[in-house]
Picture 1 (cartoon, rainbow, N blue to C red):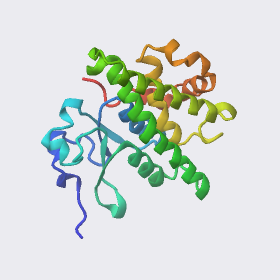
Picture 2: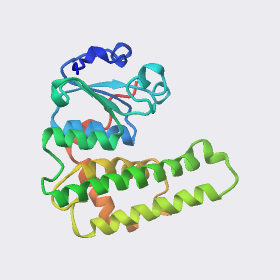
Picture 3: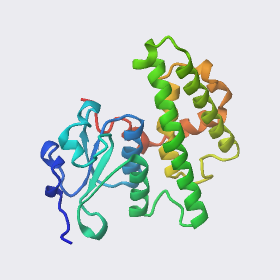
Length: 234
């Protein structure tokens, strides 16, 4: 099979590569977007960050790379086998970049799958539940008079935060001493809960010292700080 090049991807015509040899990141600095920009910064991989507004993610050009029409997505010009490789879903991208670089994912098989378990905890739990709570708290669902949806997602948000609190009670990071893709997957969403929900008392964040301490440590990393506005909001 003929290997692809970056030029074979139609998305590269809409968002033209500035550094063709770098990983092309198509994203926006939402929690899911920050996961990938933080991972790229942590790994020290050259990347070319293209701002894709959320309204543009459903465009025909973007959907040639991600049929699901959601950010983030990447093209690695030096993918498996040496050809250009496109990938979407932030959790899959974290695992791919970890395996590409040999970083932030343990070599020990049991530890490796436990780390992936906590990535999936974010993908299946924290991301969807926090996102739905945000919709009914401050988004289009805020005008609904029926309290049930907001209460449902509020309760699940609180429950998930407390799962993290129990996990972090005896360790500095989700997997212990080592900072991994489990932390990279989860911290952007916890940051959103703290900084944008404006519900500290309701969510009981003051009663989550281990989660808040862990979040502060994540955010103190210079690599993470650089990632928070990558690609920049235009």
